[in-house]
Amino acid sequence: MNQIKSLINEPVKSYEIGSKERSSLQKRYDELCSNEIEIPIIINGEKILTNDTEKCVMPHDHQHVLANYHKADKDLALQAIESSLETWNEWSKTDLDYRIDIFHKAATLLAGKWRDTMNAATMLNQSKNAFQAEIDAACELIDFFNFNALYAKNIHNKQELISPAGMKNSLEYRPLEGFIFAITPFNFTSIAGNLPTAPAIMGNVSVWKPASSAVYACYFLMKLLKEAGLPDGVINFLPGSGSTVGDPILNHSSLAGVHFTGSTNTFNHIWETIGSNISQYKTYPRIVGETGGKDYCLAHESCDI
Picture 1 (spheres, rainbow, N blue to C red):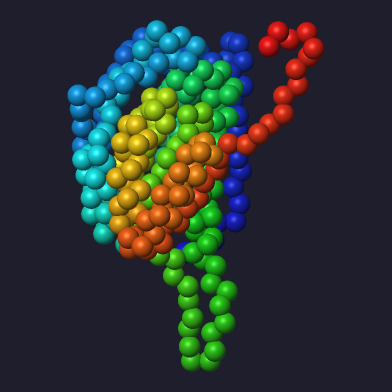
Picture 2 (cartoon, helix red, strand yellow):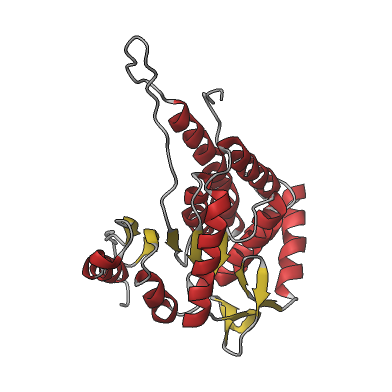
């Protein structure tokens, strides 16, 4: 396994007036804007519809419905976990190069044929302009796929261990024994894509709960990963309310980790729940979270606040 030494960040397109990329993005934006879709739960590749749905709308035009997404309940959350654990038996044993190839292909697809779709979906469902979507849904997520693969390979290659004469010491990086609960935010498609996929590159399986207000772009990302060759069940897609989906997952004995971006209060609740349940887990769940910070604002004295 050869070490990858360097990569460059994905170049940012300008979308200047009259440019080809602007025309192409506008066309895809208009197509998505005019076509209301249905978004299923996806467990082991199966698209599941329920009687409980919510609308994906434009934040800048709440009356414009982009999609209706189906919400998971407790039983479907448990079904997703069982699917993940079954998939783990095979996925955790796959060769790292095989996994890296899948995410390199995902990066290539996102840099090419899927770029307009992911950018347009982010613009529509998160009220971002073309540049804001480009640096998020396209460039940053492409970089996540490529650089995570780079780091995974270099970590595995690093075998700087002392081996006395007649002995060979080596280090093996094993996936966590269980599933990862990926909880993603409303405002960054790139982070939404990174949280379930980064563990997958390392041989883990993820149950992915996207933010309820950002299900739209996440669904297209699931379709992209499918085209890239990600096997069914490696990432199970579970839109739904936090308490309905989250409680059975956080209380499951096979929870191996949480990958989270969101509010401080929610993360505190997750940490407290895991701490309270620590004796019932098969392993110690790893908890990785990014929460909201505080930024200062300047307001001119003439502002009417």
